[in-house]
Length: 284
Image (cartoon, rainbow, N blue to C red; front, top):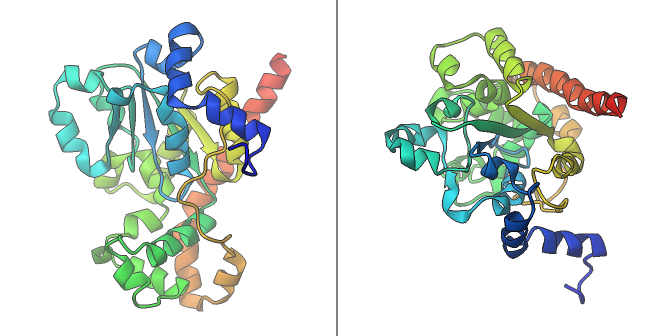
């Protein structure tokens, strides 16, 4: 590390967030790892392409390795089949989840997630499928050299398995699986998603302000230090404007339909996020 280009702050954060330091410090400091000490589970609702992998890596060292449990929406039946004792052991649950898994937890909980501007998230999702050779859809997206517009048309077919993710996927995940399965309308999903992100049991950040969010988690005592950890990032910055200029009118209409409700959610979330800073400043 000393011979690399790592900065002093990065070196300090690497030590502060190492499993060894977290383990020793948690045993000595009454302010460390509050979720674990209170018996509450931290549930990371990982919305794809929002820097969720980075957030998982930042949070994970603060929880005992044996109490970390990866779960996705497809695993909920198996998770529900576990005994209360086994589910109570989970202090950190993470994965591509929708809101509502806490109803299966016998202990208290806190949700955490990151939201992203829907247009850049959608483009990033397309690029991820295009380049990720071990994903089952890469042979269709990258293998057939799909343009972004062609991808939108392809993903609009429910049989291809991506419609719920690309079609305002953030309001769907945050509204919860039950509302999705009940066929709730987009306005109903939006209202439920806004209600959930404004609830006291949910902590949310914004991908576009990820470093600020990490600093906030540190200030709240939820993590130690403020690590600079970014995983699974696109190989180059996405240029959404260029991609949108290449869309046909029909493809542009699809894009607007796929992002419109998520855009409303994001704008509300952004206001709520920074209002927290204002309220704290007034309190001081």
